[in-house]
Image 1 (cartoon, rainbow, N blue to C red):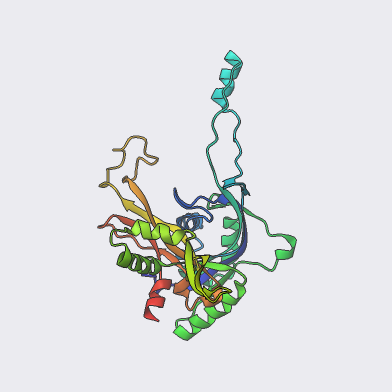
Image 2 (cartoon, rainbow, N blue to C red):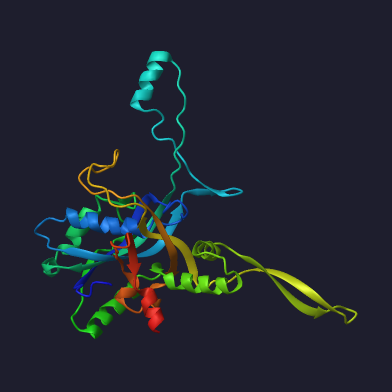
Length: 333
């Protein structure tokens, strides 16, 4: 569950991210995975000086604008470059033999973003008047989802980082959040909709009992054209069927998203698996977990919990995943 001890919100408004990673998993693209933003949150906390006593425990994302680096043909393809054209070892071969084989291109998807990041904060540092700007100075030198943080444009000087202290009273916290979410317009916030996936799967099983949860996820992720027939009368008064094809409507702007990882093996001791990136940390083989997300306007968020994503691991089940409480509120409504 979301940490209710959150004392303040750190708002980093309208960050311009250049060349962020648009490929969020092996089966999804179009926006960085939420794990990239949670990873950024942990990296930022580690970079904070000891004098700035802040802890981050959740993060929310509002996207104001995006531009994928793609081109539209029969299918949409990424703009790809070959960097570098030749490695140092390749150059040695050229000098020795005079021949050179062009290396293959590794596909990378990039996109430019304008986003607002909202971090749940606690710690003594929330009383510091300069805390927000101090954190922003660190963020300016970091990468977010693999992209570079660009300076504000001349007309965007009003977008300054703020640290909004939440009161202890529920009504005070709600008042602060209501004020903030108006500043995030226009934009769209990403929330988790596990509930819609389960609901869609139950509906499909009524007509297709052998369908799996993966079938339902794929069905909910794509455009489905459906045939609709209506009976009309022709010029002779005879009844005939009029056929019309329509795209099945979805309950909102739904997108397939990765939400974490599931364990495939037991945990190996540090250094036991050859070629692991870190030989001082236990190792485990995992696969991606997928769910459904929904982009909604910030004015439809009813509470802080609707926006924020947090780590919600189940180590006994081997689940390392992220969670968001928007669906919990919709289930209660």
